[in-house]
Length: 203
Image (cartoon, rainbow, N blue to C red; front, side, top):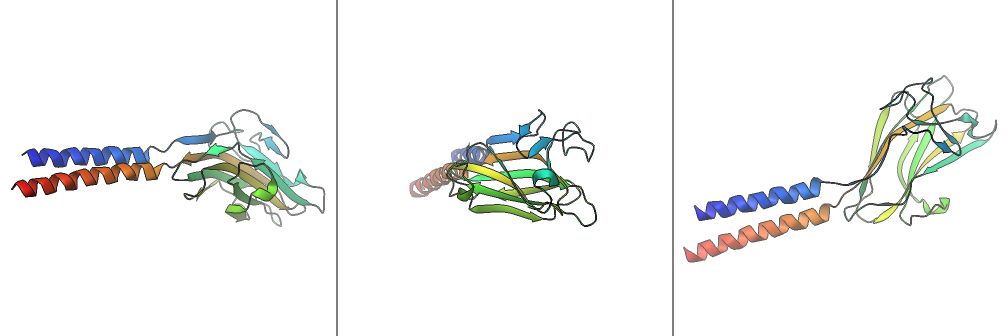
């Protein structure tokens, strides 16, 4: 009976450890509910299409006016420097475009682990979308476990003559402290194994 209690206690410890691993902190959550004044990006008015979540106009937009006729669009939207945790981080965002014959919109998402705002530091390409969909589509990217902190850049790019209108909504970055959680699991398993060996020796 006592051994059964030890197993249940270890199982409870495993459950708590798993809960710790799953309780990933949200370090950035932006739904663009408040009007934004950003160079090259503007608060949508909901006439082209409605937001992915929230009020109709609660998303950021960019369009062909980012460059002159015959020019090239290269419009960067950069997040603050965020802490990603020992297990890396997960980026999630939604994007959509207006689809008209002969026009398309491109979006690249890059990462800098220096926390810099210099374009040359964004060497890690997380997502690259050529021809954004005409429906709200979610994209996710895992930062892996090598980056302790950094910034994410959304880059609206392409030829101004063939670009149209792009929306960005529901951007979130979640830190993943999984290694610490796994460490707790390992400790719980070690405790269970030690208890089992002691029971066997006494028997």
